[in-house]
Amino acid sequence: MLGFNIFARSKKKTSVALVYLTVGNGSIKINNLPIPRTITTSKIFLPLVLSDLHKIVNICAYTKGGGSVSSLDAVRCAIAQAIVLYDTRFKNILRDHNTLIDHRTVERKKLGYLKSRKRKQFSKR
Image (cartoon, rainbow, N blue to C red; front, side, top):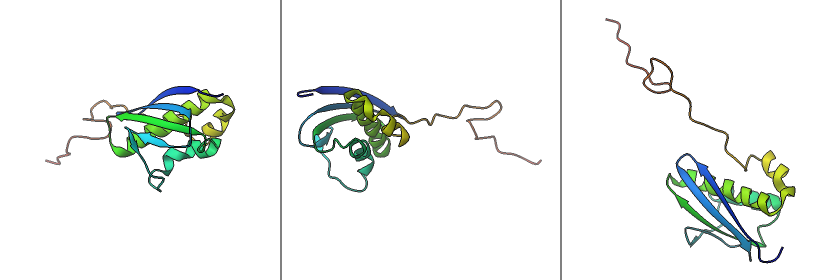
């Protein structure tokens, strides 16, 4: 597949990530800034390393909202989804390593509580 251009979108908490996957030399940019390959950003590279595409694709990601950690998780999920759109053979590998989606959701509010677990202060007298 020469000259492909794949688009994927992902969410994590309030962060939204848009990822464009194109043919290239393995560069990754987030919000038009190149990121170094360090331990803190190794989560982002997991889908690329598992699929062995880290040397042949360029990734351009745009994030909006949320904090830095949730933005990185949203980018990781979007990269994994773009890789699955590129080649469906990688779907099982990426699913086994929990990179496609984040299953955690917000706990519901219970009756009589202020939030899901927060209660009013108890008074003995």
